[in-house]
Length: 255
Image (cartoon, rainbow, N blue to C red; front, side):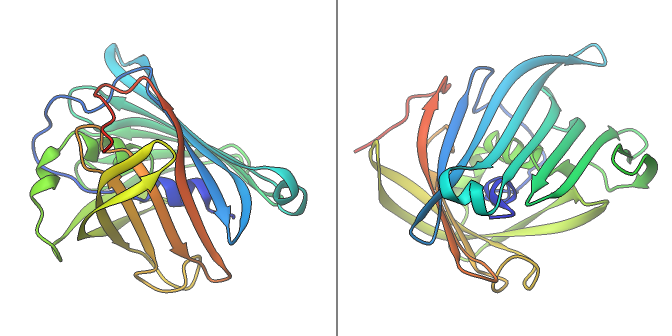
């Protein structure tokens, strides 16, 4: 349960060279219900708002993950991730990371300079600041999901193909790879939904059971919503299913 929101955000991380019309807009809100084994463990939400950063129109996206019920009693999780994203380039200006996972806390902000390819990380818990070099067009952990959703070319991936993106997380840049598995129709609380299936290649040992232990289902439409996530963890397994949505830019198609 320590990585509820992290798992949600890592479901899709792919980049292309040219952005096109946004698959989302301000006002969008998505909610997923998290199960740890057979237990209803908590929820994760993603919300999009308008913002202005450096006199440029931007999106302010907010991700929250939290435990509920008995799970909260045994292991309290309250995670907040935020990202400010340029509407034209899709690149992040700033990220916020405030987490409380069973007493383990972190309070950080990162400020991207896409011209000098640097990010300044301010750690408010430890009262420290550092400037780190990053590759061009590096995304933060939350902006990656929204960066992908603006690239419908992902629909043309062939089974077995993998793509990668530079993602900044925990003071380092990681080349995160994603493999396309195929398509299928899955049952949700809203009906049967056509979905694309992906398998991110994740680091084994720390959180996940093995390198390909995470599988995700994304709506095969213009919205590219997260529908389902399954993961084998170092201890136990986790599953998330879409539980609510509003403010979608395009109709949510069901069969």
